[in-house]
View (cartoon, rainbow, N blue to C red):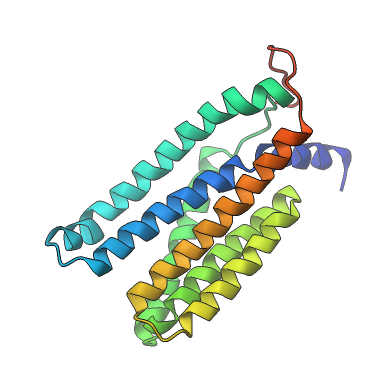
Length: 209
């Protein structure tokens, strides 16, 4: 790996090493898991509305709120201690390709589950999908904890799939298990970051743009 790639990887690692990204993403997964559980547990006429119509908007809104909250926390907790690092961010074309790829993979998994009547294995597919994303992220930024989270996602998805509970309940448990592990991992990473860093000057610094 040449010096430029090392520098880029280090700045990307800096963005994730405080644990806030996975902490907030884990909280979002827990909220979604809670909504799914509410759909399963309630006989309310609004449950179908939430599942069929409102859920996509809830996911998009949650992602937007997560981004806003992350920036707010970074500005107040992280940048004053270790500075502000910028790096070349993905272009709109790269983001679009990633979104299309994610949609294709998700659609392929849904089609496989439906056509092969593998609904009882949905938690395993959820775990595999999340595990793959976390593993790729771990390779990209060079942080071991994402590989461990990937292993947990895959293992918990498989275990929950074979517990013999209803598919909707099992999927709720799978999302909740992965979300809880990310909250725990992110919380511990942030605690370590806080213990090992000291407040610096009030002026942010740019390392790479």
